[in-house]
Length: 232
Image (cartoon, rainbow, N blue to C red; front, side, top):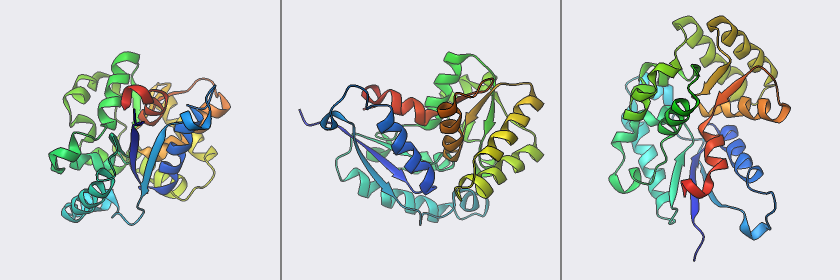
């Protein structure tokens, strides 16, 4: 039987989708030979318009057109499932053609199901586009998980957005991001955060690699990497 292939629409941003690819392979190497590693097709398009700017500046038609165009390219390769490596883009899932939408793995739903299973209130770290478009209230599963999603106040939303754009997207040291997030968790009396922007996968990887105590996370990119057989 021909092995199934996971398609990733990346480049939003590039470092986050590259880190996701690394996480998939690092999570599926133990006891395997090279030919048994997962088949992945990464379509990394950093030229996709900025998602938050598009959604908040009435330019979502151009963003939707770009997403559909590039998803079609990926879909035509015969991938079994597609991960859009950008939470903010999930605001436009309903605008995707049916043949593509049915292959897309919803990061929002994966997050919601993990929150329901974990049963621990977690601080939502997301872009301003995701916050303002209520991406984490956009599906039935997300609504079921609402009691476990803690949204920060408006000032802290702006701080979190700056962490994404000033530190994570440019590939700067993740330590200041960790320090800032730890401070926010302390402020809200929490120990867990939701990586509600795929850029925060860089922080999740840092915490995981260094086994840092007193802080946990819900990150759907880790979930996908660890459950490839179920996803495909």
